[in-house]
Image (tube, rainbow, N blue to C red; front, side, top):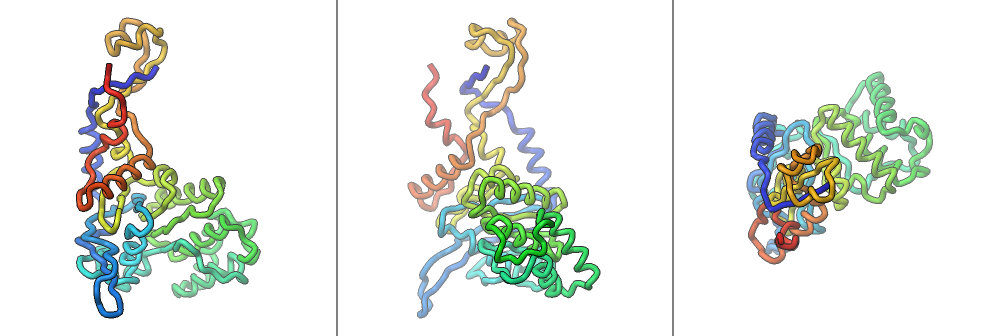
Length: 326
C-alpha cells in the first residue's frame, strides 16, 4: 500500500547531519563571486557567461554541474583549470588561485571530446602522458597497467585507438585523465554518445573514483546519470546559480508524506497509523517521496526564464501539480 498526505515529515536531523559533514570536510574547490564576461574586439561586453558564482566542493564527493547550453558550465570548468582568467571574483582550487601551476599535478581533466593520437595503442597513449609528468619508467609501467585494468581495456590494450568504439575511447580518455593519480577529477560530459552499457560502465568508474577518495566535478546533460552518481548538484541558467544542494534533499517533495505498509486489507487504506496497528500491518517506511532530477531541472529553468534574477526556492515543484486533498 502507498498513501500520500499533505503532512510534512521531519528531515531536520538528516539535513543537520549532512550540513555538519560538509562543514567538517576539506574544501577542494571554492568560487567567490566568480564572473566571466566575454568582450568583442573593441572591448565591449559581448556575453556575460558567468555571474557572481559562489559554491564549494568538498573532498571525496561527486559534484554535478548542470545547466542548458550556454549556461556557463564549460566556462566554469575552464576557469577552475586556469585556462581562462575571471573578469572578477576568484576561483580557488586546493586553497590556491586556480591559475597556480602547483595545482596541475593534482588535477585530472576529461574534456567532452578526447583528442588522442589515433595511431597509438592504449599502452603507448598512457605511457606518453606519463612521460609528460616526468614519471620514472618503472612507475609509469605500473601505472599504465593499473589504469588499463581499472577501465577494463586489458583485452584491447594493444589495439590502435582508431579501432576503438566511442565507449572505449571515453574509457581510455578517463585513464589518460588519471595518469598522474590526481586528487581532483574534472569530467565534461563523461557519458555523452555512449550506449546504455558504456554509460553504466562509465558511471561505475566514477563511483570507483569516489571509493578511492577522489573528488569529482562533472557536468552533464544526461540528468539520470547525474542523479545516479552525484552527491550534490548546482544548476546554472544564463550564467547564474539557480539551485544548489544535495540531490536527495532537492528531489524530496517536502509537503507530501508517503507511507508504505505491507499486509493491510483494502479497507485499511483510508486510515494511517491507527489502522496499521489495528489490522496488524507492517509499517515499512514513512518518508517524503522524491521526484526526478529531470523534473527538478526543468522546473528550475522554467522559473529562471519566468523570473529573471530570482533564485528558485524549495521543491514544492511537482507537488504543486497534485490535486487538492478530498
